[in-house]
Length: 116
Image 1 (cartoon, rainbow, N blue to C red):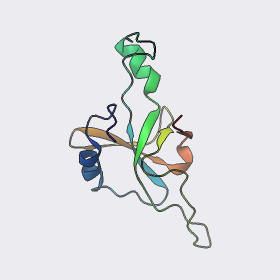
Image 2: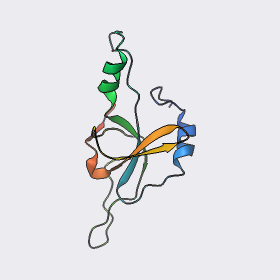
Image 3: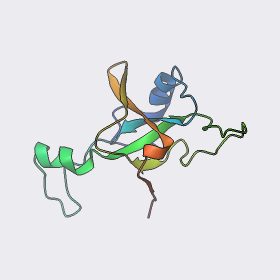
Image 4: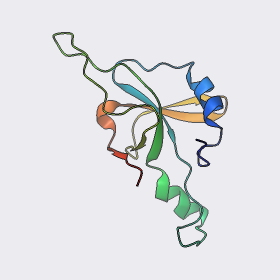
């Protein structure tokens, strides 16, 4: 389903992301665009809208998981398509065709946003 907060349709975004495969416990995310309007219909100024949703992102790709000393693969805490909360600072920024993505470690992700 198309998420209007992402600037490109999912198929096009996924084609761009296929060029980058995260290793180990890395997670490739795209920050969600902030809502310009509240649930009650009040328009927010740009500064308030940017601050409101800068820590929400959608998981675009994940690595296979980190390994233990014995060589077993630890499962990832998120899956592709999850909406997550990320830290305000940290991670690494990547650009694919004028779109900005970020790479975080699985352990840096704060939580998963469940749909109501």
